[in-house]
Image (cartoon, rainbow, N blue to C red; front, side, top):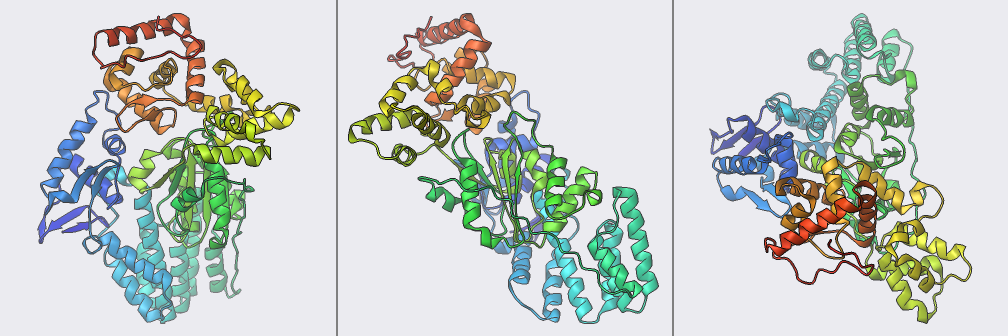
Length: 612
């Protein structure tokens, strides 16, 4: 088979066109091809095709679309459903993108004479039949599609540079003029056309290109020409080259010593061009510390700079607007504020152009949602983007093929090791208390550090004493506050995640807080919440993605001690005792009717909470 996306979507089987005719099938297939040979989560795929699905029929429609796509493949087993989602298997010699990537990898990794560069770039550009996936409009702004287009521009520039070195000015004039007509605001094409015209003995025509591009930039973007165009103008005027060197920022925050995270650092992967890496986990689990530790370890791999942006997705302050984040990134590279476009899309295009050939690290911390991240992705090259978020960002996985690195709380042994490192020598008789203290803190690094700070701040307070105070769930969140701002307050950290929830998802979160240390199935949870199962399933899965609940392999939902304590607080404050009692009564009635196979040993906790 042959799968082609560098132009209109096309699928051939033994020379016959088997491209799906319908919009839904084409969109599903194109989305799978954006992340070929990797799993695309079912929820993310369904949400991408049917973003508004009030009837809850998206997954059944998706199954039908997948069935029809399988019927067009040479082997239905190419498209499989795995625990992580749907996976489409495509060999490297069956994909135009894979062939293009192989050729661009050669161009990056090998030193070639100009004639060989011309041959390889011509071969790469020959794979293109138009704009990528130009007949699947919904994916036109997908980061992978934008990266393909940016790599194509880079290859065109290499082709032109090599042709100029070979003295083939006429070929460059024809090609650069065509590409500049298609993208009149793309300054590198204008600069190449000016250089070719000057080399061909036509400086007046080169200056006319400069003026035409200058006017377009001013009228469309409110910008003056950049360094490459000014250098070409100086050459055409006979004034010599004008070089402008962009900055190489080093913005990484300092490291925090880690315990038990070496395997996770390895899972983030090696530096280099790839899909974004998303480090995700609940509040206080150490996502940012992990990403920063990886960044410092691989700092030398990014000679063009290391950028850090706190997107404030979960914070007392408002999330950083995408256009403001782009302005900050461009300023870090040395762009003057007056040269930064005011339009969001123009800023994103300038950012991708500047990063297309650079080796940089971009660490986007505390992202709230996919759309806050997507415009900040780099334009190819050898750069690496790492995102930290409490949200698993399924849209970034589905469309950009992001690699997800889930960060769980520490193991009991590692949590104890961290406490021992923070507290110092611990008498043998306190060993059991330290282990239980780690458990009560949820094995969360932030909570463990706050607990250690409390021990250090109060003379005579030992692990057993602090444990006794923390065992009362009503006081636990008060005690896990270092009194040094919201970033060191477990309650505040959790509140930012809770505040981001939709009303019904927030209700499901609060109802989970009414449970003891037990798990609950979907039917029982629906009874507790007094909502339809399909609604509860959607919101419970959203809680799992935001790390505000856990789902076991058997499909049961639960919360750890700290989450449940906060959820119970929210229920008491928002719903009150009458609503909480009514919810428990619904659950008791549900179990009494035998509809959920209830466990007979439900216990409502040491503080004597009752069902009614």
